[in-house]
Length: 232
Image (tube, rainbow, N blue to C red; front, side, top):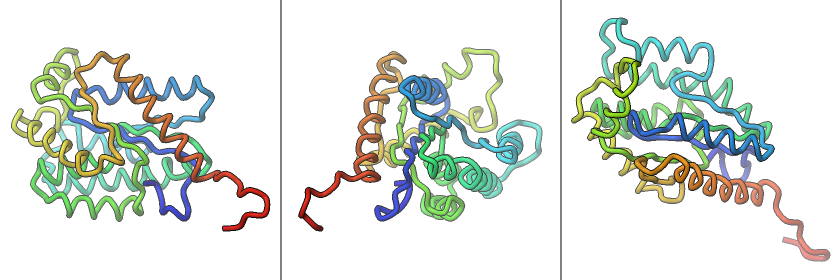
């Protein structure tokens, strides 16, 4: 949730998660286009990044050529980028009633650094809860593909793999399993989809889920008035 039940933010926060090559960026863009066409104000962003400082940190932690980046340093860089992202971009947008769509969020750190790097899922979660002041998505879409499919997609183009993408298949296998455990533990907050589906079918399923979330959020932020003469 984006805030406590007593003080819900008027906007809606949607995060896309999944392994490298799962199709998150494509589906985030398709969702943003559909919601804008429906008349909503949408902020489409990504992690690490989303702010000027975040983009600089993205280059440091993902690009090759910056020397050794140990696991703790990696986790702290991601958390620092996320702290700026929430403070400067995400929370202000939610407060003004916008729909925020991010390509990756806390789940990625829990999985990649907490599990993949062996730092501990709980420790990384706590770090990022502090960095974001407890801001969680209203809905997280997990696009699930196996490590072979993800690598085939990543290497199909001309772009070179970044530091995390270039990790061995065993790492990406662990990442996929950890994402599924995370999502299956919170079925109320996650939408798990087979990333091998046709993009149009995926986009339709995601839009339907977000539409339901919007309706639920509207009911919370703007509750129906009590009938005349009736008091709580």
